[in-house]
Length: 412
Image 1 (cartoon, one colour):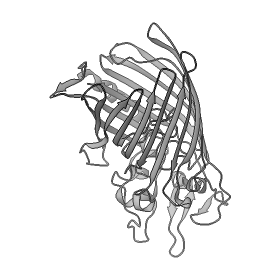
Image 2: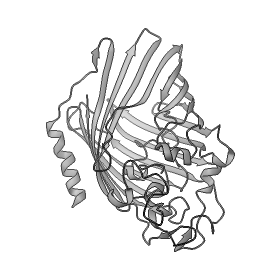
Image 3: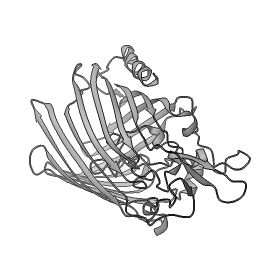
């Protein structure tokens, strides 16, 4: 019933919206963006450290998550996001771009201030462009890049046949201050890069790389290489068919350690009894037909995706959520990855219901890739704190990760 109600609410909201057309120009600055209302349901939410590490007297050993306890009250929720683009072109070579974004999560946070997700100035040199500021490094086909608020430098090249991006950035503060100190991300410097080649019309071949280049070896969470391809058949400006896929492996030491399994299938100590680790991998294949054009009411699209991600592959949620859609209580409270410990099919559909207004829904038939993985034992059960001794996880019997997401997006 909650799933049906969520869809009805999302669909009903669009009746009060109308499209605004081109970006608005105020004093030389162009403004555009979108409002998104999103409903999410998860069969088995994933509690993380902030939710489950309790002391004997019931107080948190770690800092409680600012957005609430995922295990207690996040089986279904709504999220409202406002995204504002700010652009200015100074001449034929130099431009400024910024993104302001704010989001509220139903019943779990009162934070509503806009945050700066992107803000940079860029200058062109022929087909190349150099920028300084805050970025959302989008590389490859979405498996190892897409996280916001990373500060540093960006060099890009874009031609009809070849495009490339290289970022050198401080990793963004996507976790709360307390958790950031635990996971040693506050000072991490990362490299993101990709190369895309378009040998024939409609076909894109891609390789991408990301790595933490500043942390000690034992604390490195990303050293990932990805390869993928996308073919899109377009006729009369209609995207009739799109087939895409990407495969990636993360060889960072911290990522490897999170793939260790518990020796006991029912009770798993937190700090002992673990098997040997391996390099986590993630991959997906997506087939899509047509698509919802934001300013052509009645246009629609359908997609089927299969994806698989090992535990520990995406510890801090760098994967692009537009490609790896999932309920955000997999990745918030943080840290918990997007492309992490799940496998299965997702069926999705989208339709432009009014000019500038798109409704999209997706259902994931998912299971955990490894229900006994060290990192994600909390998602399968709860922590037992004995009177004396080391806390341990009690593992639940089901590894289902089914979910439903439904959202309405209004572009302005």
